[in-house]
Image (cartoon, rainbow, N blue to C red):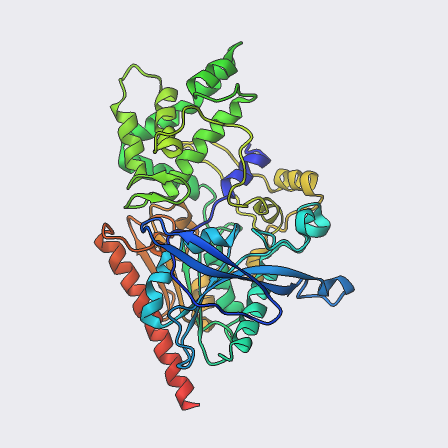
Length: 498
């Protein structure tokens, strides 16, 4: 049975990648601002943003005295290319579970296309992440504070902030297109459905909006990870699949932890063999997610097509080497591609991207059941709503609502439902991304389009363009630009007629 910590690990992910550009200052009344300089991975130039803090209310859905408490929500603006007088569009990134700076510097696609559309760029940080803490250092203190962390409040935050921004900039006629990757992509899609009067369209990359209830097979995520490695090398897949038993066997020795610590070159002696298991697990899962066609530094510095590189390491080692030692050597690519680490810290890591709040969301509304099948390269596991609920109750004092997301946003029979009332949405997925199995993979209508690439990884289309991009990725981005262009043309045409 998968433990609570294992389940939380299974679903802590979601992110994005690429750069941005120089901007002029925009000051909004009632906000704080500061300067932020971020370095684009592929260029030596520094790219400045203006950082602002919007006075956001705590609770959009009740009128209790505490509801109107104000916290300061962080957002970033780039207006270098914006043609305000011509009603230039506003491209909004719906921030997900982490620091907004991280998403801004890693979403170069929006920056790349901003000049073409004369667009203003806006990146909004999700409440309870980064600097947008409603209760400061006490925001994660208990369920009484964390109770205000959910997707519906986040979407309402974005709606209020966007409307205020447009009013303060006297740009009511500027159309808004929302963008998001992973959980941010889910938010972008849901925002278009919930607030169609604010956003004319949504680009949702690697957005697993169907990963809930029983819409998508529970084993699909890990089956997809396993398939990535199997496609690279059948031997590689078999070695990793067999390494877990060797790790378990080693742990039964009297000096098992000492042996594991030595094999894994740990900086300090391990307290649990599960630390080694999770270290391997994380490396293989994240590498499958970010199996990009070009060298990248997203989760970690990695070469192009890192899954293939991992398998080359495994296949190149002597036949007499243990499966566990081969798995360790492959996983080391994820943690030490730059060859700068002399030893590895497998325990006591830091949350450098500020993802901690996702534990709460996974225990309340974002319940995405996951299992490992016998065909997976990971040890078989099952999922129990009852056990998971008990674990969440023990940790936070609350029980999950496993069917709330599909009640609030839908998911079942999505083709029939969205075809009847939805429009202007792009769902992009790469089939090498394990999250693609919970995404929209077929066109729903002429304006709700699924762009699927066989070699794509986790929101690879949102990364900055590079000279080494393969043709299929270049074509995918061109398709997205053409669709957005059509949305805007239709909007401006309707605006002139009214």
